[in-house]
Length: 65
Image 1 (tube, one colour):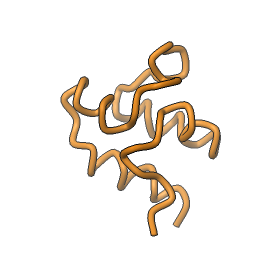
Image 2 (spheres, rainbow, N blue to C red; image 1 turned 60 degrees about the vertical axis):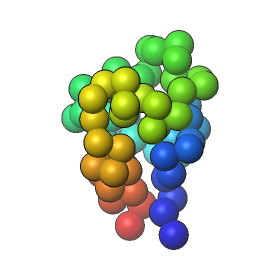
Image 3 (tube, rainbow, N blue to C red; image 1 turned 90 degrees about the vertical axis):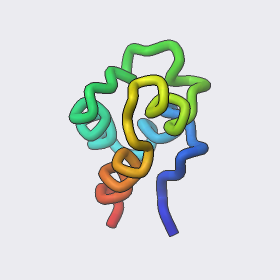
Image 4 (cartoon, helix red, strand yellow; image 1 turned 90 degrees about the horizontal axis):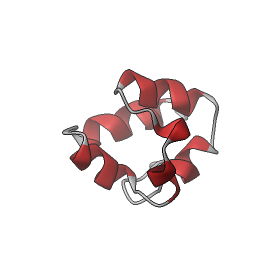
């Protein structure tokens, strides 16, 4: 079962590990200082930035394998 899902907010995910910020940065997502991170889901953010949410989830979940 995946630790990180597309329905989680960026804020929820960033609380799981300091390494999450590095993965988000590798996708050019500057979520740490973004007010939207509190309420925006990973899926919403990926869509807004033209990213494939599956790729993002794969990279994030690799932190917890």
